Image: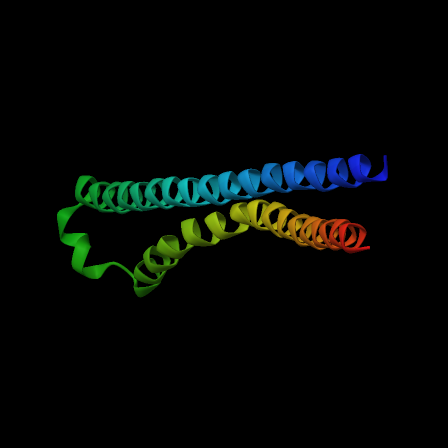
Length: 125
């Protein structure tokens, strides 16, 4: 009878390992899709911001464009970096989940290896 429980234990561990690996692959795929969408949205919002800035200058007075203060150019450059910073901070939750799944996978691999070695030890005896 111990053989059935040992085999079942190894089989169950292998099934759990497969579930964790599928979930890990799915999380990595979701992370990259999410990052791409966020960066596209950030770039589009930056372009919209630049066009709104220059269109407001044109509506006020077209002669003001060469005389814009240097701080506004710095702010436009900083505005390009803000979507990237926001995307990185929002992707942090995916990185935490992925690290947790990798730890779980490593633990299950060790447990599966011990179950297989135990099974082999029983067969050899």
